[in-house]
Length: 239
Image 1 (tube, rainbow, N blue to C red):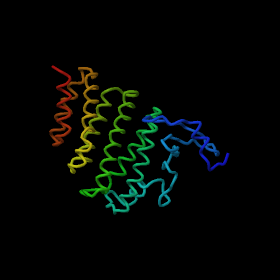
Image 2: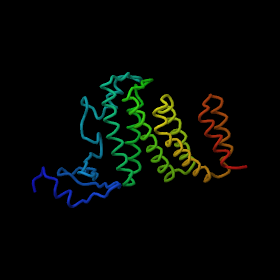
Image 3: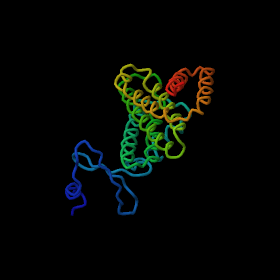
Image 4: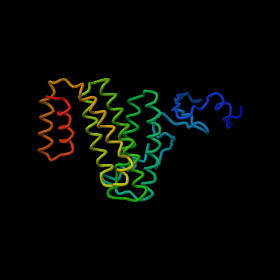
């Protein structure tokens, strides 16, 4: 077969509409690769580093390049376009990994997508900034889901609830300043709140006092968003 012709690969791997079809294959040099079947072909990604295998500016990622500029770099239009491209890649791989139940790796990639779009956007309200907020919100939700799965596997529902609380705060930062973006992704906070509510019911009653202490501490530092979340959790736990 001509190595540039994908016909046999596509024939041997039928595409199933509205499904996530993912597999891990081995390259000629022995490294593992991630492949996803899509309607008109196959997307292939590296399993480590950038999904496309690129090394922007000689570094592992655009995120690493931004970090070399200091704690709060300001992004140009070109910078933001690069950040968007990289975030889409990492989010795409995170979704594929999640479908394979690769929780830790999916959480890693979702965190990368979230972080690369949290840098330097500030109060921008242009279309690229709105697209960044949308992808960042999707990455936050996926990161929370991965963290919840990992917490339930390793620690229990209390740690999982902490991850959801952080995710809700991050979503508020990503969506709160732009009504258009917030309206488009209104379901994201509700999804996380529903997940939190289901986990709160699993908490032992002995943790009520811990919840009260966290609520008082949140109020003292004027973190009213977290305080509202904790207050809702206490109500759900009942008398």
